[in-house]
Image 1: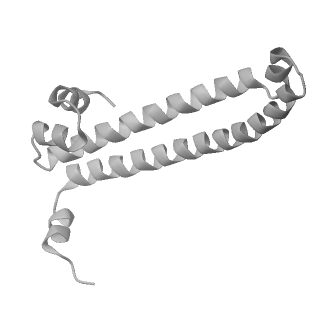
Image 2 (image 1 turned 90 degrees about the vertical axis):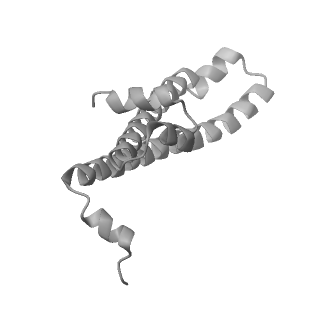
Length: 129
């Protein structure tokens, strides 16, 4: 397969752009991993809710249900996993905004592309790692 001019530009982009691209890839992988954890927790919650529905219909109390399907523990796990996913998403957007800016995109264009404010783009680009 032959390279396009855009591929050649990417190869000659320099170490800063290459490092920013690696940061984007790393952030994408982290978000994918966090998403898998959340998906697994929601799948387990789905099974627990089926059990819980039968338990409640059979006349169990709310307290019995909470204990039998470990609702407090599941809530804590889901909240922690959701926080990890939000953090990973934020890191990905920060990495993407930095890469776009280094590639020459104006902050206003980045903001329009991602449907966020220019101020948010500016703030995230300046955030420390």
